[in-house]
Structure formats: structure tokens, C-alpha cells
Length: 315
Ligand SMILES: [Zn+2]
Image 1: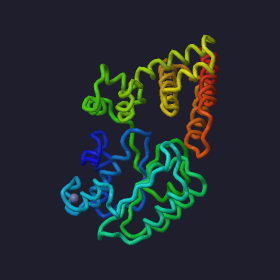
Image 2: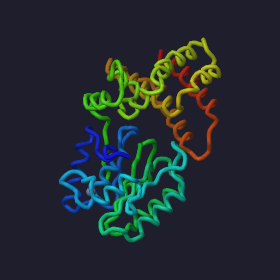
Image 3: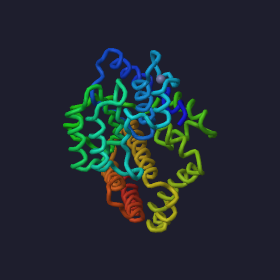
């Protein structure tokens, strides 16, 4: 990985300042909850902080990227940095992964400085995994920092939350996100790209590749055709196969959010049906993240039927 993967994004300067302040005044807690929706750059923020904390000669703000520790961090082999991620992308962390974290957090550090663990993510933990994490948070070693990434797809155990300082990452300011996107990809309209990506820059960059954007744009039509009985849910789900189900759900939630916002703006009370559909979407998200692999075709068909129901209730 190059050193640019260890710098905070331009829209994270407030949060960066907060944690640097805690570090500089010796007030860094053992656990920090890095909260905010997925694909806005929380992991990279954690990596930047870890690099800064493990660096042997940091300047005021950043790691030096010249010392031995920086070299190890960038190569992914620093013994005092531990990253916990699921075996399969999109799934929740296993209890074994959390136990390995516990081993790391109770060992003595290899170097004389900090030990940093990034837990990515803490969403959808099973009861056992959550309890194992709680145990780690209760007995951390000296100078040990646990960075708990939380995409806010559900509730964390209150006992975990209460042992962490919570740092909330809002959606980035559009101008900063659009400027960054301009360096990552070519798009005709960065504002439109961001809107389709639920205002999440990393997601927008991902969607801009491999023609995903065109597919996502066609999604609305497919959903509308199901709502108007012009296409069956079975056929529609077939047509949507190229789109990742989690992207589809995010897109639907953003669409709901916009619909509710515009209804409220016109002085009307949004229909309860919007919120019921949102519940269905959140449930689908949980199913995707769970250990049991759901039947994707059926799940997408259900989402299409839910949409058709919603359309019949709100129009
Ligand atoms: Zn360094």
C-alpha cells in the first residue's frame, strides 16, 4: 500500500483534529467508536491514526513515512498493529477473530509505544462475538487503542458503546467530496454520481468503474416496471443480478430518504409505508451480513414486491 492510504480524507479534518488533540494531551481512551455510514473512508482514517501513533518520529500532524515503524505499517507487518476483518467481505466478524484480537490486546507490545487494533466492522456481531469484544474492552493492556468501526446498520451492545468514546463521521460536504472524486475518476456530473452513491465518496468512486453507474441508473426503471405490473418480480430480480445486493439496498434507502425529505418539504406528513419499507431494507441488510447465506434471488424479489406495495400506497 502506498502512503496515501494512511492519510485522513479532506472531509475528515475535524475528526482528525479531535483525536490528535486527545493524543497530544495524553487523553486517548482505550476504545474509540468510529461511527458513520459505510464507504465514507472510516477505515483509512483509522489506518492514518494508527500510522501516526506507531511512527517513531512523527511530525506534528502525520506519520513520517521514513522510519522503520512507518515502513512496517505501510507493508502491513507492524507487530503492534492488528486489523480484524471478516473472512468474507460483507459478513460480520467471527468470535474467533475477536478472540485473536483479545490475544493481541493483552500481549506486551513489541516496540515501546502504542498498540493499535482496528476492528472493521463491529456491525452484526453475534452474541458471543460481542461478549468477547466486551471482554477485550474491559481489560485492555497499557497504551492499547481499539478503534471500533461501526457502519450503524444496527445497534451495538450498550455495554460496548459505553466503554468507548464515540466519534461520529457525518456525510462529507459535497464540494470536498466532488473535488476528491474529480481526482479519482471521470464523470460528467460529480454531483449526480454522489447522489446515486448516497453521498458517499468512496462508493461513488467504486460505482464509476465497471459500468456500474449505468446499471444503477437503469434500476429505477426496473422497479417502476414492477410497480406497474409490466415486469414480474422474478424477471426483474434476474435483470438486477449484475448489481451487488448491498448497493441495491443502499440505493433504495437513499431513494426513500429523498422521497420522505421532499414530502416533508412540501408540508405533508410522509406515509408510514416509507418507514415500513425502510424496516424491510434494514432487515435485508442484516440477512446479508449474517453468517447464513440468504437466497439472493428471493431476497431481491421481496424487495421488488415491497417496492410495488409502497408505490401503490403512496401514489
Ligand atoms: Zn515514521
